[in-house]
Length: 231
Image 1: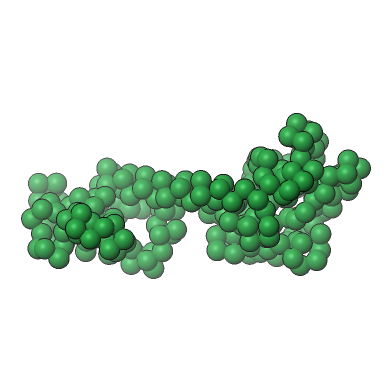
Image 2: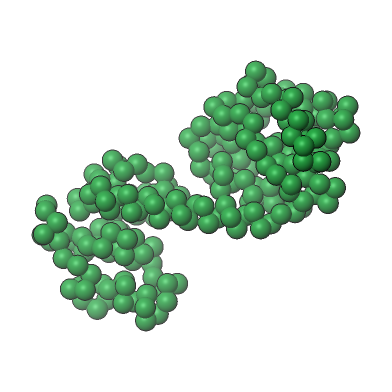
């Protein structure tokens, strides 16, 4: 279907005008489908932008996190979605993810395993590969910095303990938190997870640096070594 066969939002019936609805009632009044309709601008001859957006959302069970993981090619399988519209949708999803990450940074002080999860989930919770991160804290449990230690898997060879404590000395941290993600969604720690935790904990004891927790992060939940009493 050519672009000339589509029709713009300004020609829709009043109930199908997301832009006008946003201006009159505010952004909170719009459904997810209406917001996406504003991004794509038009549908096709037989389908409005709202209807097209509803169909796309239905394909991911109305889950915006799942929508954000779709590729340009996957979005383009929907009639009415070309490359430019697919890019616009993914760009909006990425902006939302980055906003969540910035809001999490405002937490600053770590008070519980949940606060660790809220800090790290926007960074590693939706990745398709494993990453191992360290959070460095001062004596008030405020975050001094956080850094990726390895990418692609968790083994003794990939996690360089020396780098962990090099950063400890550079930042003046008095405690650290270990974090990594499980893309599969399974939260049970592996033997490698347990071994690297104990290896870093033992190294920290010699420098009087405490390992407060090791969090395994998935998209919607987490596993805390400290909460489970296995740290």
